[in-house]
Length: 197
Ligand SMILES: [Zn+2]
Image (tube, rainbow, N blue to C red; front, side):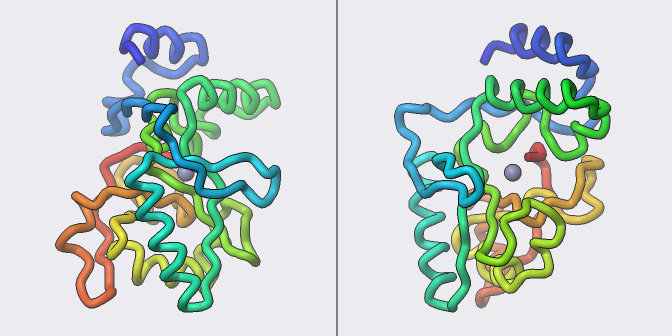
């Protein structure tokens, strides 16, 4: 998406022009939608969850490894277009939520890792809430230990440097970041540098 178009879109939503700079975030390129792979359906609304090919393959390996440990990982949300992100924000604004509040958990259009098709929101059998409660599940504890070995990183840990809310459910396939961090099944969380949900 062209930068000029994005700037115009942000103006129309009331998002400040310095959004990216102020939060040390950069815009993401949208995945090639023709190549997205279906990895499942969200259990609440049944919407298809799609990921970019390599992220989809890594997700399947991770899901299967979790299942072997009797942990159920459920895909809740994957690829999201800039257009869809815009609609999401417009809907929340229409419902009367203040923009600052919305932007704490929803990235400005163009700045969501979900645009890349590499980010996935994860739930488990007893928690598909996309809330902090996910951090208290066995699935989350499994992810903390093992996700790095599959190239997945939790982008927004507590007290991250972007002033973005804690998102224990949001993981991004970024093997270039996790390589060297995953040792003996333990993952050190790298400093996040990307955008929120
Ligand atoms: Zn997310």
